[in-house]
Image 1 (tube, rainbow, N blue to C red):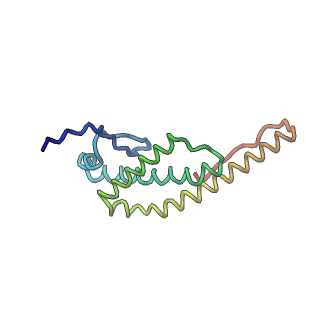
Image 2 (tube, rainbow, N blue to C red):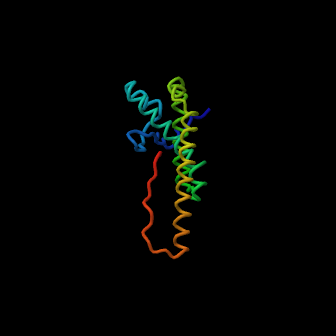
Image 3 (tube, rainbow, N blue to C red):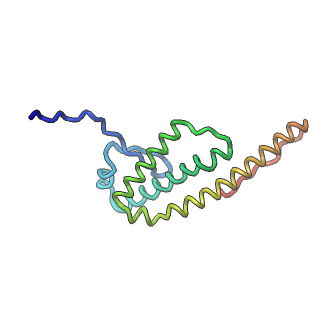
Length: 146
């Protein structure tokens, strides 16, 4: 039988969140795990999984409530974060389980709904003021809780 040809498949980068930024590692999640100490790995897993939940809540809750458009770039970013979270769950299931992502999702959902309701109420106020022809300064905007 013939020899197996080497794969020309391009190695994709591993996406993760750290220090509030999305970053990419040129190797696999397992290689990344091996290159970090336990504290660095814990921080990376925590931030990446929590940010993945946050972005998913933006898509499912905030964007529809604010009539914002979800782009293909947004979807690609979410997919990469969910893929990374899944790989982290495979490598370190106890750490990911300890994050209580279900509770975090509930908290994000509640805060996003409150924030979107507040923003929509302000938009209605501004539109009503503009329709009434009022020339006074717009009210001061204060948003809290997000």
